[in-house]
Image 1 (tube, helix red, strand yellow):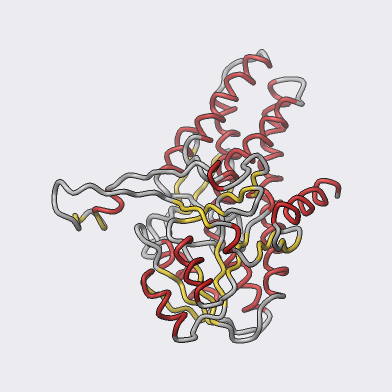
Image 2 (cartoon, one colour):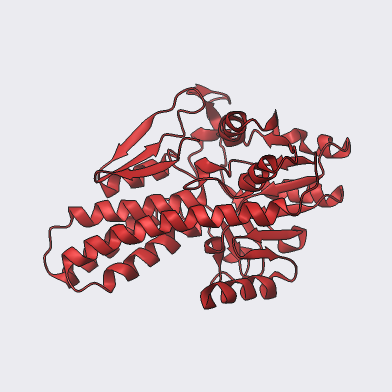
Length: 347
């Protein structure tokens, strides 16, 4: 698989996901502002990948700061971190990674030491993500049976992470184990991450994949073609409420109506202990043109308004289990997620 991002010779290279599946195009970022714009434009996306991209973006930002006084340097570094964090407000991995980066810089004794610490921390964040995804795949695949029809949403594979994937990583591990999962990928309107990206990854890995329109999900469930729904998350509240790509809530309701397990997969870094429930999670509103236009062609009449929330909240009572890199959380999530987090910190 082509990786979503890589750091090489003082440059952050991003696989431009807006060009897929037709073109594999690398975007070279040499400034923090370029990383901010790439995040806003969805050239890099997926909560774990956003965290790593923001970390490397802060490395680039640190190299643009001319200050030699450490306190002045740190002040300007925090400003750059704020700009990166604001690029997409729902994905908590952005702020998680940036907080981790700032703490590393604050422990340094000089500006040069801080710059070195920032690069080391960004590389650690990227490596940690790969390890976390592999663990999620192992924990999640253990829950599956051979030949299951699995419905997934948006893109949660290697493109949404540093490598391997979260929800898609479970499917990938199951495939590698010979469980022969049958993947149904919802197209995921409005920018079609499922049709463009998840299908692209599945084909490259030899996974049986069928793309469906988002509104076909219920019909497939009724026909008995879906045995499990597995999705990712951009932020998980302390009580288990899940913020994920808009339309996830609809799938959770459909899964409950058809008595199908609804599984969420995400690293522990996606759990926000400061968000008591889903109401505390900010929901990003994206440009209406993503709804009114497709490939630059207007789909709706002139003068018609469009709403484009990027995410919705799935209440915890609709979630069967949350698969993390530290284990599987089950209801009540306020207790099980807290224990997984405490064990991970203690370890």
